[in-house]
Length: 199
Ligand SMILES: Cc1cc2nc3c(=O)[nH]c(=O)nc-3n(C[C@H](O)[C@H](O)[C@H](O)COP(=O)(O)O)c2cc1C
Image 1 (cartoon, rainbow, N blue to C red):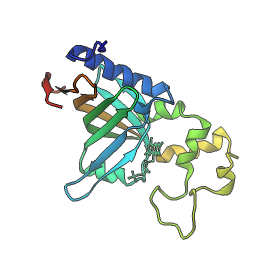
Image 2: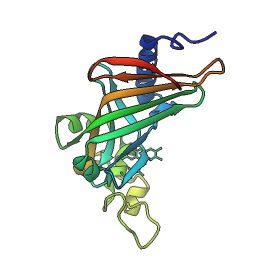
Image 3: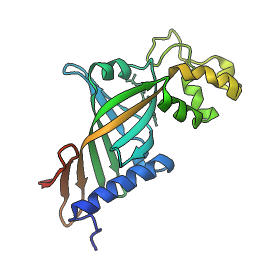
């Protein structure tokens, strides 16, 4: 039997948001770690990020990053980016075109930082930003930090680097692989258009 979303655009949208919502809390969801692609005409690049929030009402998803990472100046230059998800079990690929908002030291980052635990805060405690050249192999952390020997109070030091990237979804492309025939659909959120495509 084919799933409800096989030939129903409304069901597809429902399925996409249920997968994004689930990804936020379910560590084993493949949708939790999409590829995020940004850049300019000469140089664009993809990297894995972790989805931390999904908000269908405002067509937003967000991830956390370090303000010093290479993607931040890229996004300041060009806010248009893309996100790519694939769930092998479900045989579903989702491609998002998004517009990014960089949040640093504001209400949004304060809220997310307060929910960021001891282990995750470690990433923001590196002395030099991600991508800085090092003469030796390194985690970028002082050795006591490497061993998680820091208090929650000391982890506050990382807040100055903590960034929340909000991705406002402009369009969604869906691809479902099925033996009976693949199905592909596109949703333009800005002008409320949705249509089927040849896979
Ligand atoms: C499983 C996994 C999860 C990751 N999650 C994030 C993340 O949420 N945010 C982030 O900025 N980088 C994350 N990274 C690291 C990035 O993939 C990338 O290496 C880093 O952001 C530096 O890339 P950039 O300088 O091009 O931005 C993750 C990497 C892996 C393998």
